[in-house]
Structures are given as C-alpha cells and as structure tokens.
Length: 406
Ligand SMILES: *[C@@H]1O[C@H](CO)[C@@H](O)[C@H](O)[C@H]1NC(C)=O
Ligand SMILES: *[C@@H]1O[C@H](CO)[C@@H](O)[C@H](O)[C@H]1NC(C)=O
Ligand SMILES: *[C@@H]1O[C@H](CO)[C@@H](O)[C@H](O)[C@H]1NC(C)=O
Image (cartoon, rainbow, N blue to C red; front, side, top):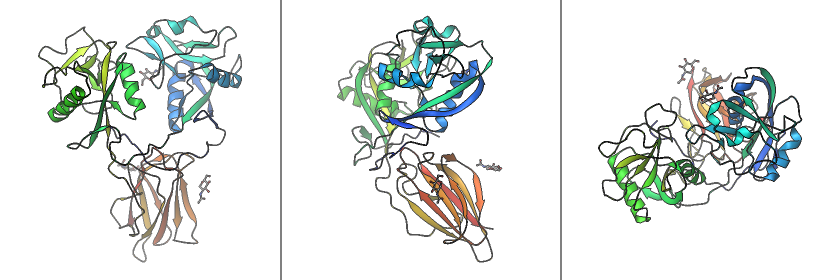
C-alpha cells in the first residue's frame, strides 16, 4: 500500500461509554483487560499487543494523579502490573509507548529510569517492589510470571470540519494534506507534534511532493530546513519512512547521507531544489507533517440492494463508519447466500455487524465486532440480511464484503 491511511473522521457521535470493566477517566477508558502467564522479557511486547487488540495502549503515567489512580490496582507481589515504558534506541532514554516523554517520575523509582536504557532493562512495573514505585524486570529474566494487563483506550474526539484537509494545506495533485509548523526539539518531538495533529512526519515519494513541501515550508517561514519523516533507527543502515510507506524516492545532496553525522533526515529549504541531508536527531528544526485527505464528506446508506459478486461497503468506507446501514442480499431461488467479509473494522464492543438468515424472522447467524477479514457465512435460504450497527464508528473503516449465490 502506497500510503498508510490516516483516518480523520467527522461525526457527531463519540463513545458514550466504556467497555465492560473499564472506567471513563480523563477522556480515556481505563481497566484490566486480561491476566496472563508470560516470560518476564516478553511482558512489555505482550502488553502492547494485547492492549492493541482493544484499540488501547499500555498504562502511561504523566502526573501524580495518574500514579495515584493506578497504584491501588497492584500490590507488592504477584500478579505484576506492566507500565507502557519502552526504550528509545536512538536517544537511549526511556519513553512512553506513544512516544511521549517521561515528564513525571514517582517519589521512588529504580535508578535504571535515568540510565542508558539499551543496556538490558526490559519491562517496567508499577508498585511491585516495596522499595520502588516503579521498578523493572531484566531482559535476561525468562521466568514465567503472572501479569495483569491494564490498558487505557483513548476517546477519539470528533474533529469538526468541512474540507478534506481541515487546517492542513491541500496538495490537490495527490490528495494529501500537509502542514509545516512548530519548531521541534528533536526528531522524536517532531513526530509527536505531527501525531497530535492526526498526522505523521512527512514522507516524500516524488519530485512534485518534494516541491510542494519545500514551497509550503518557505511560506510558513521555515527557510532553513524542516524535519522529514525518515530515520535510520531500527532499519540497519537503511533509511525508512515512519509512516510505513515505500522508500521509493530520494533527493539527497551528492555525498549524502554521510556516515556518522546523524540518523534523521531534513530537507534544506534554502534552495528551490529542496535537497535532503542526514542530521543529528536531536537538532531543533521545524516540522513537516502529512496526512491523507478525506475523500468522502457525507456518506449515506444506499437504498440499492447489494449486487452479487461486487464489493459492498458500509457508507463512507474507509473514511467514515458512523452511518448505520442494512443490506438485503438476495441470491437466485434455490441457492443460498455465501457472504465473505473482506474486512470488518469496528470498535470492539461498540460497533457491531449483525448477520441474519432471511430478511425478517430468521435466525441470527453472527454478531461481530472488532477486526476481522476473510471469513465466510452462509444462509439457509436465498435471503440474508446484513446490518451494520455502528455506535459512533469512530476511527475505524467499517465493512467491506462480497456475496454469491451458491
Ligand atoms: C519486542 O518487540 C520488538 C519490536 O518488535 C523486538 O525488537 C524485540 O526483540 C521484542 N522483545 C522481545 C523480548 O521479544
Ligand atoms: C450483539 O452483541 C452485543 C454485545 O453482546 C449486544 O449488545 C447486541 O444486542 C447484539 N446484537 C444483536 C442483534 O443481538
Ligand atoms: C482467505 O482464506 C482462505 C481459506 O482460509 C485462503 O485460502 C485464502 O487465501 C484467503 N484469502 C485471502 C485474501 O487472505
């Protein structure tokens, strides 16, 4: 895929409640997701993966209020409570899994928090040691322990707007939205600035995008250079775009990237060519962000019955998923309906896809939520009713499916 889809959703609806067992605190749903037996050194990765399953993230603590909220959930013994702290291999400093800085530290913590994190510390734990509020498990500890995985699921606020790029600049040639602004303290900080805008640091895939970003930068006063979204970290000796897009275009000055001078990339905006150099990731520079424009502004539920063998989607797919819709699928008499879900992306336990045999009065075949692809359901008659029932449909793509009479 050429672009990571960045979904900006316009909707009046937001989450009205949290999933069972989770509590709404400070614009996020907080709670325990699962209890698991896992080796110490896998605890952080597993916590990240598990929380991802419910579109959440591990516990992040930015102030005393958060610390005081979470502390009572754990005691000085098993089970263990992992925190969302991970090692940034570029800065060698601990940071939160969402890229934010460790701007709060509890009254007592293991000294490793202030030390080079690449030297073998693994999972940070909350209040599991009587000496420290935060302590860590070593990466060489493969012992299996009981971990309680707590997550927080941010509420995604609707972003009201009418045009595809909102307050971003629109490059009408490629449907992407760019913004240049804010002087970042470092490359990591730059990516945080973009993330807060629902975007990523800009990736550049052709001369035309390069020129657009350069002109935009200059028009915003960034006349010396801007950070682009590529680093060398984690990619061996190769650069890669942070938004996951292909590394299919470069515009380096001859002789660059120059070994040993830095693992991040900046565009020199002083000349019209907008050529690139590699620089130290802790330079202060303005930021260029990019995100996908919204193609569809006002989805509606079509009154056409779905056509056999064609891809049918929920209204607004994949940009907006908030509009409910019923699909009445009909196969030839004597056949049954075979429905393939190509993709369902629904907020787990908020948005549902309900499949019924027949249009009315038939059995419920399935009641689905979360993320699914490539699954098939069949009816007992030639009729099937598929109901997309979003409760907000916030930040998800919705439904794509195809059916056949068999
Ligand atoms: C955790 O995941 C990261 C990134 O996928 C990987 O580099 C690292 O080796 C994993 N750690 C463990 C202990 O599996
Ligand atoms: C689908 O499941 C959810 C959660 O269990 C429930 O609230 C909803 O009523 C179900 N829908 C139908 C049509 O049964
Ligand atoms: C869907 O699943 C079937 C059976 O599991 C598999 O043969 C097929 O390759 C899958 N298709 C895709 C697009 O993943």
